[in-house]
Amino acid sequence: MARELVCVVDEDERARRALAAALEGPEIDVLIFAGAGSLLQNRSAIARAACLVVSATLRDIGGVELQSSLRAIGSRALIVFVSGPCEVNQAVQAVRGGALDFMLKPVDPVQLRERVDEAIGIHIAQRGRRSRLHAVGQHLGTLTTREREVLERVMDGRQNAEIAVDLGISTKTVEQHRARMMAKMKADSLAELVVQVTEWRLLSEPLR
Image (cartoon, rainbow, N blue to C red; front, side, top):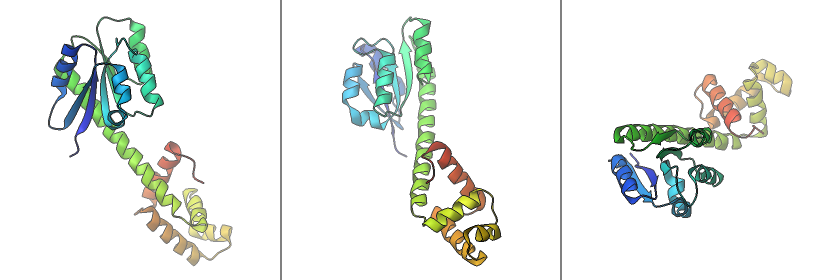
C-alpha cells in the first residue's frame, strides 16, 4: 500500500515535532515546515499531500490565507487547523473554507491522529472518484458519432426499436452499435453504464 503524506506547518519547533511524532506510522510519511512560505515553495509536497496539519496563527501567512492560497494552486489536501486561544470567527472562517477540523492546543495526540486518518480516508476516496471519472471520460472519447447517438438515447431510456426509428437504421444495427459502445465503456450492464455516465455528467464536463 502506498504511504500517504501529511504536512505539518507550525512556527514553533517543539510544537511541530510533537505533532509530527503523533502522526508518524507505517502508512504515513510526515514532512514538517516552519512556516507557510516554506510549504508554498514545495509544490511537490503540496501535490502529494493527503492532509495538512496547520497552525492557525502563522505569522508569515495567516492560516485562513494559506488555505485560500493552497486552493488557488490546486491542492486537494484536507486541512486540520491547530491553534491556541483564538477568536471564534477565525475557526468559523476556516471550517467554511473547507477545513476538516479546528483543534485547540494542547492537542490530544489520539484525537489528532483520528482526524488525520479521517482526512486521509476522504482524500483516498476522492482520488478514486477522480480516477474513475477520468477513465469514463477517456472511454467516452473513443466512441464514434453513431455510438454516442445510441448512448444518448439509451441514457434517455429508449428501447432499441425506438432508437432504430429515430436514427433511420435497423434494429440489428442499433444492437451492434450498442454492443460496441458497451464494450468501449467497459460496462457490464445497462445499470453500470447509467451510473458511470450520470456521475461523469454531474461531476465533470458535460457530455459532448
